Amino acid sequence: MSTEMPPQRRDSEVIQILATEHWSLLATRALTYQESLGRVNMFLTILSGAVIALALVAQADHFGTAFITVAIFMLTVVFFVGIATVRRLNMLNRDDFIWVVGMNRLRHAYLELHPELESSFVTSPHDDLAGALTTMGLDTNAAPTLGTVFHGFITLPGMIGVIVSAVAAAIVALAAVGFGAPMAGVLLAGVAGFAVSLGAILSIGYRSFRRYGPAIHANFPTPSKPPSS
Image 1 (cartoon, helix red, strand yellow):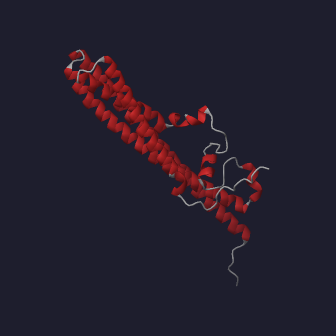
Image 2 (cartoon, helix red, strand yellow):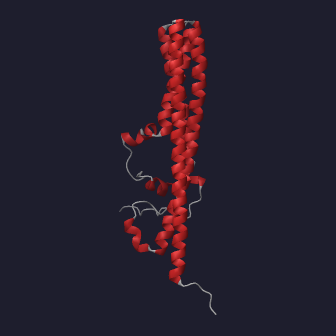
Image 3 (cartoon, rainbow, N blue to C red):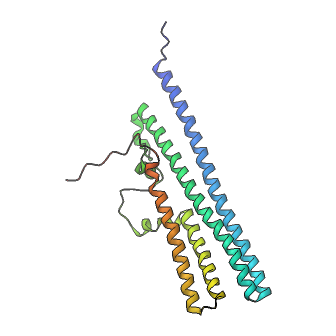
């Protein structure tokens, strides 16, 4: 007696398994977004509490030595939490990239079973970096514009990185005030602290992004376009 499964039944079970895994990845992405927003809210809450506390200290000390000492200490704690938040957001973005790659592979499996559905998908069935970015809504073939150049600043790590760099600028400026620097020196110190901090955060984020592609071996890479004549 033949125990071979009928093709229709096999396809039905395969689609059911793929759909279950697809929903699992969607749920995991939702948890990733939830943790990202939770990290951001935690950082902003700590920052807001520190600003309120410093306002009370300033009223009591009238921006004297005690205020500068307390402010540097509290803002250093805020800066540490901010750096940890940016680092964790980069890690979560890397995890989200993996989930997107997984869903692209499942989409490729759907198309292997029913290739006639290809025109119905707006996302990519390819599991390389280009395919993942296409699924995320980023056109990898578009010419760079002012919006794409500054896209990193509107992401969660980029936005929090700017705020963290402002905190770093405040710490350096307060330290300059404590050492008796003139106003011009305080401004230059603050600008330098902001630039160094933001440059380091952007550099770390860029290196993390460049590792997205090699992080996973592409089983179904995006076909290369033939050169235009």
